[in-house]
Image 1 (spheres, rainbow, N blue to C red):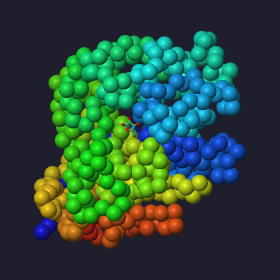
Image 2 (image 1 turned 180 degrees about the vertical axis):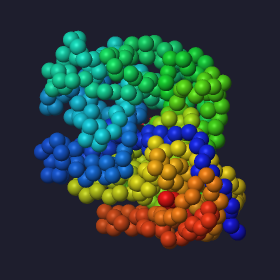
Image 3 (image 1 turned 45 degrees about the vertical axis):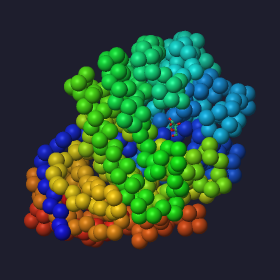
Amino acid sequence: MTTILKLNAGIGKGTISRHLYGHFAEHLGRCIYEGIWVGADSPIPNTEGFRNDVLAALKKVNIPVLRWPGGCFADEYHWKDGIGPSEERKRMVNTHWGGLVENNHFGIHEFFRLCELLDCEPYICGNVGSGTVQEMSEWVEYMTFEGESPMADWRRENGGETPWKLKYFGVGNENWGCGGNMRPEYYADLYRRYQTYVRNYGDNQLYKIAGGANVDDYNWTEVLMREAGRFMDGLSLHSYTIPGSWEEKRPALGFDDTEWIETMKKSLHMDELITRHSAIMDQYDPEKRVGLIIDEWGTWFLNEPGTNPGFLYQQNTLRDALVAGIHLNIFQQHCSRVHMANLAQVVNVLQAMILTEGGKMLLTPTYHVFEMYKVHQDNELLELTFESPDYTFGEVTIPQLSVSASRDASGKVYVSICNLSHKEQANLSFSIEGAAHEKVSGLILTHTELNAHNTFEDADNVTPSAYDGASLKGGVLDCELPPASVVVLTLE
Ligand code: AHR
């Protein structure tokens, strides 16, 4: 059976912010320490303490924005502990994540330097749960005030001559849970209070993000929009893809076909979550001024055997690649409301882009999806209509296809397609209006084994390759996708 899709390259549906391709780095396990920061004395090749291999890999995918320092860690983090000579910095216990000693060698100066080296926007999450209004207010002063002031003078003493440019600032994280176990009414009031003292200094304009809902807690969104909507620029949403249940998570490897389709189904749930949270936001903000910021998403499996459970280290298979492709297509479809999304997390934690082991590094299947999809960044979303065939296995029936298309400034069109089925090929025929492209090329990520993944011994087991399954003639694009595959096509 062939699925017919109508793609109108002349009808734009909004801009796909590059920030939908954002990332998240927390002081958790081996994400910051070892994954990104090894220190200037390390035998691992580095630039001012940042590992060169990871920097190069992240630059290659055009990382647009990086969220830091947490996560749950953010509401325990006291920024003043992370400045000054590193040997004199206060040590603390990272109670959330493994109970290890945090030496604060990676602090605010290191974070901004990292963002400079990556050429990406910093996104800082402030501490509401255990921090004061004064602490948050002074942090913003330290980072962005230009003239003479106690905090700006202190920054200069620490080597930060000029203030940094900072746009994205989160006022707390998961304040319904690890960020203080608050009720939405209480947090809405606290948000209003804290954000009052989060000032715009000089020409630095902050985009303030309120801590949003957990998954389908629509009441949280309702209360926040009603009570504090006019004081925010963004409202976050966190939702992880967890086959099994939160209490009984499953391993990242060794899953069967039933778990495959269950994972696909749970990924597709993101569409419903965005639709319903957006509908509430529409009531209070019909102009869509406030962005929905999905600043934590991705798969959450059991930690790899033999690793510290508090480090959340998991392998990453072809299944994760499909999860990534599905989510990115969904975010693009909702680009008028979703202004940013941050995968959790960038290195060595949960659905990581990159895994490291000492001096070794590998790129995960998820990384390759981000690499293939980066062509969509800042493009115009295109109108696309189709009805996906069903994909049924066992008790579960879901759509077989996830598709999204965009056009860049030069007129090239990009189509990203995921075939969710683990067993059936997909045949697609696009009728294209509003453009007359002559050439199609593409990349494909797939494998014969659903559990396929990259290891330090075989780092290229799952990598993209040139795709020759598409033809373009007279405004009709035909393509065939093998089971369990992600394809990105370029039409020019
Ligand atoms: O990403 C891991 C954790 O998941 C974050 O610290 C927290 O915000 C979420 O619960």
